[in-house]
Length: 150
Image (cartoon, helix red, strand yellow):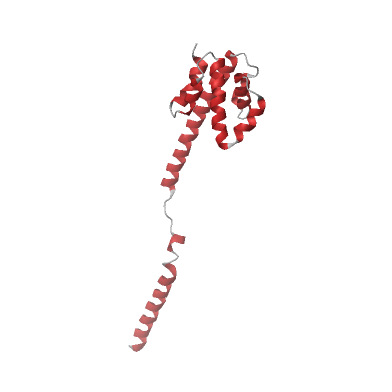
């Protein structure tokens, strides 16, 4: 009887020792389903990539149309990221070296407003249309208005 009792206590001891080792390791062995948050993040990322692509095509088409209407050479520069800044400077009749100022963080905002004011003047619109670029939703409409209005 004493031998059976010792055998049971020994097995309980081994079981408790095994549990003491395995319980802290549970997260390492757990097969939790992390696909749902990853799917939401993927959909979120895809949505913003599509939104950015639509904005980029709209902006490039507007800039290309502005360059065509102002008889600026190389209107296809509107589709290439750094060259579109050079195209905007050419349309606004500003010096090309101003492109350096577009790479300085806060100065680039001021330079973009000045260049868009010049583009508005070249299109025969009031220059305050360039200032509207800093108004959140209206700033999206300005390139299209300058491109496709008479």
